[in-house]
Each structure stands twice: as structure tokens, then as C-alpha cells.
Length: 264
Image (tube, rainbow, N blue to C red; front, top):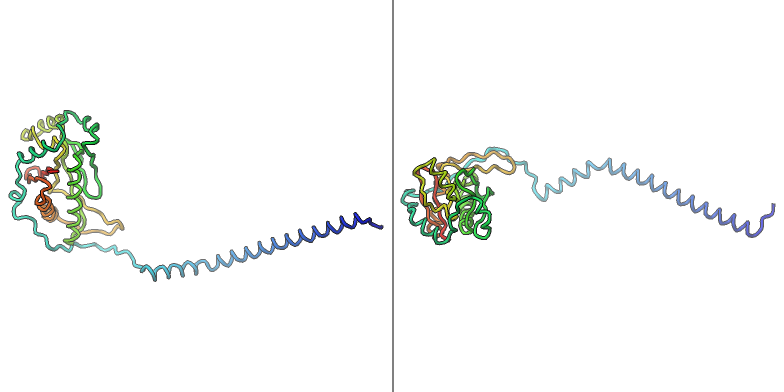
């Protein structure tokens, strides 16, 4: 059978396409086989690669097993104050005078505090201190008093570290009291003052009986620090901020707290 020129061209073109497709298919198949072999090799050598990476990392960063032994206190240079009453004897008149000068006007009800966003700052538990479950006050302070509380909390923790003691936080037991709070408090305690610096947002109480232990982030057990020792350290911190003219402080024996009024 004799083919025309056009038929010859078609046949040649088809064969050429066929060979080209065959070449492409062969390459795809070979690549697939190569990739499969490569993945098998990676799978085989993966543990070795990971081990090598870990070894290099340890060499540069230092591979240390976490110390989970009990971290003991190593107390030193803890002196406290000679007398709590003498060191912190600022009477109520001093607290009231400065509170009335720089604080807010006493609030009849708690709802009023929420509207004073520019004058009052809401405080809550944080890494520097814990706010106790308040029954006769609400967690609001003027900005200067809130800053003072931050300073005391930070200085206390810094002092514990410097003196070789495990970390603890101070506990705030009373803050802003409204007139409504004062009435309820006086029903429970007749000796409670009807005219307290707590009404002006300048004043807060910090317990010297109770502290909150700060747990280690890695779960390492920490030896407890006695409340008496923590009280000594706290007294040093408070003595210093009082000496700097930041506040007035009254040592409250029955209430088990330091009554602190900001002067700024």
C-alpha cells in the first residue's frame, strides 16, 4: 500500500509524539522509583540524623537534666526592725490627712467605683502580690497607691532572692471601703473606725501573718519559708519605702497586718 505525502507526515508526527510520551512516562516512573528509594533511605537513617542533631544541640547549649531535688533556703543578712510598733507607728490622723488631700471622695456604694476609671485603678492578683478574698472592701486604689503596692511586692521578692530565700508573695487583705462596707464591718466589729483612710482609695492592708508560696515553674519542690522570717524581710522592705517618704505605715497587731497609706 502506497501512502501519500500527507499520510507519511501524519505517521511521522504520531511516532514522534509516541516516543516523546514514552520518554516522559519513563522519566516519571524513574523519578517515582528514585523518590521511593530516597524516602526509604531517609526513613532508615532518620534515627541517626535525629541523634546527631540532638548531640550537636547538647554540645552547644549544654544538656542538663532538670534538678528535681528539694531546693533549700540559704538565709543570710536577715535583720528585720528593732520594734514593729516604733518603726511603723504612724497614727490614724496622719493617714487621714494625706488620704483626704490626695484621695477620692468617699463612696456611698460599691457601684460608684466602677465609674471612676480615671481616678481609681482596679487591682487583682498577679506575680507581685495576691489579693485576698475581700469581704468588706473592693479592689480599687488611686494610681499612686497601686504603684506603691507594685513597688512593695517587687522589692519583697527581690529581697527574698538576695537573702537566699525561696519566693513568696505578699497578700493584700483590705483595700477601698465604701460607706456601705463600713456599716457592714461595724456590725461585725464595733471597734472598726467609721472614718478610715480606706475610704479614699489611698490605703491598703498587707498581712504579716500569711504569705503565698510561689511554686517553681519546672515543678522542683521548694522548702517552705516560715511566716516569721517572711515578716522580718517584709518589715525591712516597708521600712525602706517609708524612709523614702512614699507612705505612712501603722503596725496592726490584732488585725495581723500593716496598714499602709500612699503619700503620692
